Length: 301
Image (cartoon, rainbow, N blue to C red):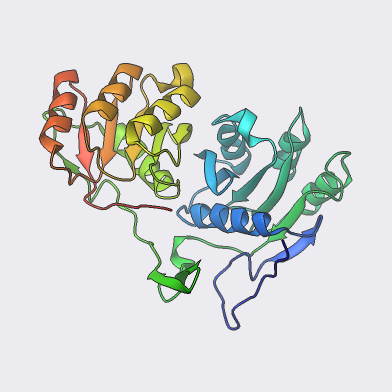
């Protein structure tokens, strides 16, 4: 298939369209789509953060005190799927990040970050297997504040196209509403806030398991929410125990929550709004785990 990329004139928000391509093969259609998805997720965060994107979905993501720590943690989300992925980072790529990436059997298709440090660039472009293959993009500094509400999302259909506003807000602890008898701890609230930001960028039906500030398992794009739970749990394995769960939309039945509880999930955030909310809440109360409602859905198709 032939394809072309058209840039909007006058756009100033750091983006794939405004980024400088520093090295690597020509960007493919899919590279550009994945890079856009990766950068959109990274723009949710002010702190050092890294996300690992595969087919527009995060298979790993983490925030930490340093960028290299965030990258290493993000890679643990799903190391197998991370091979051939696209990365977005909220700080300039440094030598420690580059050394992590070229060690072992790791490889990524493209990286977008505010900048690439000279020594990191040297290593990433001279290392065998990486060399001229990996696409390196510098987009300049960014944070959640750079996102422009005036931008719109466009989707092409046969016979027309769709336009919609950008889905920019993401609810956190200050907006969460506790609906169970058990209240989440401050640490769980922080984890739920992080998980909710990640789930916003996962294809629906979206389920995300998080421990600390690290993604442990993702269930993306399944046709039933309980299957997304099972997929996220299978990705997390033993790490599901004690994790928190975020869902991009309500649980229509208690089966998804019950599967999560059985796997050891310790707290849940979801939008609420199901006619069976009372049954879902009752399942959490029976297990004595907290559930909060965000009162906002983030469907991604």
